[in-house]
Length: 231
Image (cartoon, rainbow, N blue to C red):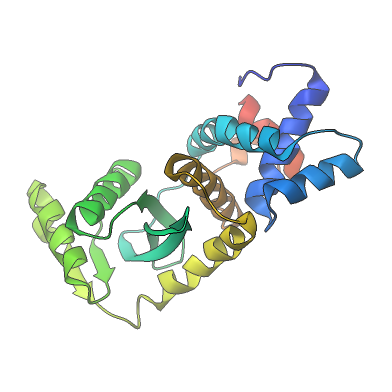
């Protein structure tokens, strides 16, 4: 079980705050106002600390029930501004639109793309059959170098297709829509954690978790979260 300091009420407040923040386009200050309307006095900095503390734990709990994504990856990167500087969020979905993985990096280069492919391989536990990229050559080089590290890497086809990658570009929108109201990400680490929570909620909405044994059909969102965290 995840340990929550304080009473049962404190636990529920933490669950509300974290889930609402990663699920909906609101800022820390807006969440502070929402809590105040419910008679809960929390500063926006307290809300922020709870996001940073609990999102990694929640992600770990949910990932125990993760479904494996398909073997055809559509890979692309999008831009995220942190303290006035652009950083790069590498993301991939399969051909059905299910999230493969994501990784926030300070630079857009071969090393960053290779780090993403390695992370995605570790998450999925297998090489993809196909990797679809845009025309950016650093990504093609990174994909090839990554595949060369594996005996069966020659079985994976690398291709470039703007049309096929429309799927991942559309998927970026859900993440960017949520990031817009954050009123400015200040630190790389805190931004990475917040994005992980947003990506987790995006995967939950896309039914990427096997929850059958938890018997949560017909349950409310808070009840489902409680079941996952308690399992």
